[in-house]
Amino acid sequence: MIAGTPFDGVSPAVDREGEVVITTRDLSRSFDDRVAVDALDLDVHAGEVLALLGPNGAGKTTTVRLLNGVLAPDRGETRVFGMDPNTDGIEVRRRTGVLTETAGLDGRLTARENLEFTARMRGLSKAESRRRVDLQLDRFEMHDMAEYRTAGFSTGQRKRLAMARALLHDPEILFLDEPTSGLDPAATRDVTDLIGSLAREHGRTVLLATHFLGEAGRIADRMAVLDHGRLRAIGRPDDLAAELWNGVPADIDLGGPATSEAIAIVASVEGVMRQEARATGLTISVRDRTTMARVLTALTSTGHAVYGASMRRASMEDVYFALEDSPMESFEQVAR
Ligand SMILES: Nc1ncnc2c1ncn2[C@@H]1O[C@H](COP(=O)(O)OP(=O)(O)OP(=O)(O)O)[C@@H](O)[C@H]1O
Ligand SMILES: [Mg+2]
Image (tube, rainbow, N blue to C red):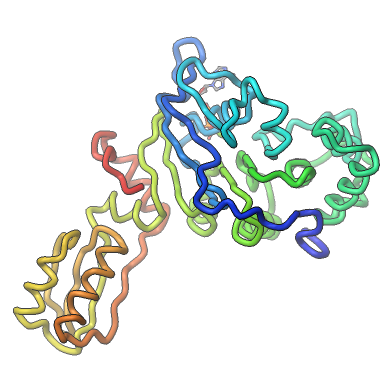
């Protein structure tokens, strides 16, 4: 579905590595007596893909709307490039692209008119708008539909157009609310790959609300899990799995049964939660990847030959259900 040179119209990456471009502090919003977002503290770094996960009604869309300045918080604040989206909304929206849950297209306008309207709203000149609209219509292979009113578009066609619109003005940050729901598998893969490359190769920052755990696990640098508006857990996908499961199992091949010295060395490494002897070495449970690195250093630096080592991966579904089944208090200390 995404044709041509994939990144026409995307300017070279701005080097902002490590810079925090989105922050929220105590960000809270209720609707009547229903709390949608509750004391949310988040930092998103430039070039990062942060996935927002959580069950229906968890507060993902509300968070996106607060970040984009479409909604005002009841309490707390958010900054995007240091600006308050509620008072600097125009500037924030000029530098950010948003794909809303419902696509939000004007059904009376054609695909091209929808895009041109947005381009003009973002402050692009008429000629530049036309150029960029053509570029997006090409990229998303929508030229044959360009002159049709969007009222008659299918869910997937709307999503594609909305994605094209989000990228129209070459934004530095993308807020994507379920960008692949309603897309067929090929289109889903294309959009997921596109999001990944925008971040990795072009330094774009992406906040991605999604229900698709595989997608999140594949392209997200970190995942934030919301529930009832509260941040339940945040971290790298693997670390999150480790945190929720009291450690990730890892196998260490020592070429034979571990000596008591090797067992004692491994036991002394901080973050090792459990170990079990195997015919070829040890199966241990580690808190995170850095623990694993320390174990390997401890063994090799004391003259123990390590023939192989591997951490097992938890599936995203496992992580999700582990969260659902657990009380909130156990997640206060999640790796950041
Ligand atoms: N405009 C609104 N008016 C009233 N209640 C709202 C409004 N927007 C959100 N809510 C409520 O806030 C809570 C969070 O909704 P939100 O749409 O942010 O969840 P979500 O995580 O995006 O869910 P989903 O996965 O279903 O998209 C829900 O209880 C919802 O009913
Ligand atoms: Mg939503």
